[in-house]
Image (cartoon, rainbow, N blue to C red; front, side, top):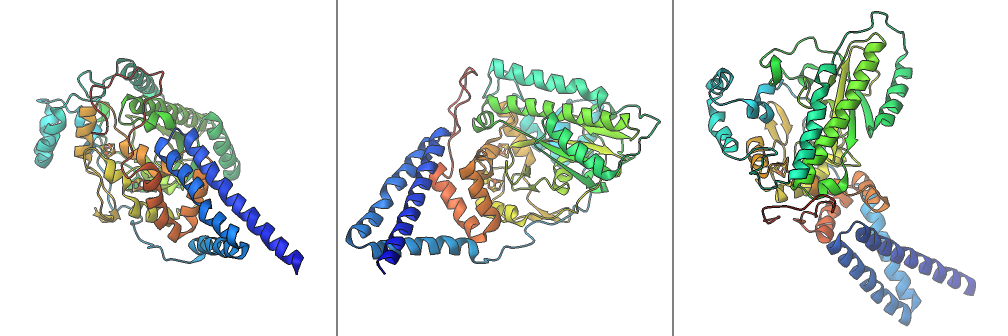
Length: 459
Ligand code: SF4
Ligand code: SF4
């Protein structure tokens, strides 16, 4: 009997020590991430929580064991109870195509008093007044914008300049001698080579009309109908650096966007040329030269879901990625898209991006029917107007998203909990708010970038 007691005491002690060490690890992780508020709160809990337990222990180890058992049972309960998840938060497949001329980048390129400008707003009179708002602002990477930073803007411009040099390499002659390659070999090669080139994840999908824009909205082919669709696509993500994104909407975000558009563009151009070398038609879709809606292609290729902020959210890096797509006539093997309900369910509850958006462009509502499909839609006009004022592509929503926390044991465990437990998803949002704040402040830009903001952040 005595030995059973000793064993029970030992087990309780070991569990208590593991629990304490986990809390300590959480505090250290926050401290290493330079999250002062989260570190302070986690440390406080680490020091305060063991007190009642130790007091129980002091009076009777049985009470301590009981307290511990209740703790453990509650934890197990959180993961085991099958709370239901709404299955159809968002719809499946869009019913219509989008015209690229309607997206903000295309509208931004319309020069006042030109034929193109007149024609567009004659056909869309409702948009002219909306667009006049962003036209009154300084504009992206402009000296008069809020977050002007000469070196950071010059670096961003250099990246966008570099990606623009790829525009003549997105397509090209196809080798008339076609090499016979099995689907399996191609999949293994592209997945591994893609990662070696710098992609984070690579996926494949069969394309439908809704993946393609109906008409070109930028460049020399403006207004041209997009035909000759390829039947398959390779989609991939490239990761944005945490410290550059965390300071959003300051200038580091637009530096990082430019850098990762360039990375995605380079990889897409290489993959496209690779397929053409082997005798298959292929086209790279890169910044400023898209014929497809990359987030939709990437979603259907199994890389993530389109969240409240309208961006692709990957299960591990959240929205902190940029996308690249290569379309081809090589019959790629692909998995049928399976909706990630846990991610959409979390997104439906969280709303943190809507809370921090400086232009209130993100809705707090559940997804609504847009062109026949249930989804979230941001107010792209007010978002772009803020970009034009800020001079950067803002990214405050991206930086604040709980999925954007760094890739480490602590956050990966939380992502695991979010994925597997509906109850944990309910707890995770208030927990994130408790540690980071409902409206966390922007971080400072990395110290090697001169800090020259004209305005007070977080105002
Ligand atoms: S911040 Fe929250 S609501 Fe917004 S995209 Fe991320 S998970 Fe979804
Ligand atoms: S980029 Fe900025 S302005 Fe646009 S939706 Fe996100 S937070 Fe709002």
